[in-house]
Image (tube, rainbow, N blue to C red; front, side, top):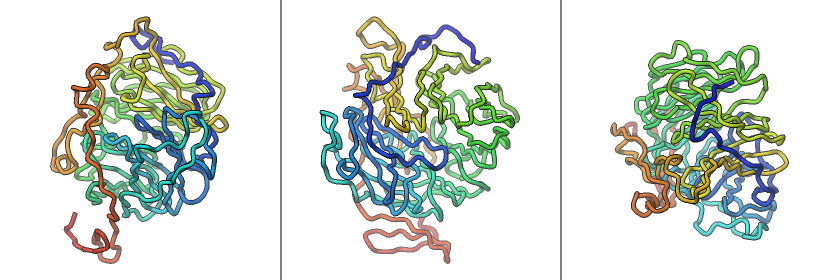
Length: 449
């Protein structure tokens, strides 16, 4: 499996996390689908808690410790279980949650949020119960969400009603609806600039959809033969796409596709015969892929190159006997750069809580290492939702990770806040209209959106 070559990331390693650095004590809601079950911003992470009321625990990266049910403050407000959540890439304190109750809610985490004290003990506080914005439009439970990678306040959501909706969360408006899926959506991802998005579906197809017109531009009719879930990942600006799934013989596999010709994959990499779904974590800055599998203890690492053989093995990755239930990647802006930490994954486990896995490139110098830290996506959007919807196409604004440059590269500017309000979008079934409720006043127009 995989070829080996010389690379500056060849010896990247990850030590087993220490007990005092883990987040423990919560019973997680991890019984539905092949979700990640955890998402992170540079400051916080979120996990859905087991039980009614749609509760979410929001923890701080710098405050590991033990969650105490009924004592540690949480976020809750949905009428059903929370199935997915997503942090705004341009606002580290804004969290979106999707629920079985068919709604999406936007929340703001207070700057002084501190559910765990510095000594690792639970700290009594006030729960977050009031959302900023409620988005109502899906007819059935909302399963997946993804924020736009370059435009401010644009959110994509998919539902069991077999639709994908795009929202402008600042105005609480539904921008478009894609209705051509014939089965449940298993994954949704934006491309590098956010001009299109890809969906994998239970019908084994991967569709590439123009975000503004909601039309299918290209399609892989049979991405993988197996019945397990398919995950999709755009490989930066290479014009290539990675998919993970199972073969007909139930073996796990990874495929590379060229968007110019989707008739057959450029490369197929057989992994093993395990049953758990593979979740690829792709670092677009370094082209390193971290292959995480449900139920796996180990995490494989390889480097993508835009030519055959495409995959190059890196060291031994991370080895453990503790099975993984979910995983996410912390944004580059939240890493310990001076310790040569190139990626941090948060691993959800059954018995040992959430473990931070720090992948480090060994270097002897204590100085900033520019060769392993190319510029990365900043927290400043490239354009507004209105500009993007009008046709603007831009890659993400980037920033230097050198601590000396942080005051001059535009990072850290306060993003535009969404005021707390009762904006709600409601679908008018009998008339086919869209009603927008603003502060209790209802206006109905066929052409409002």
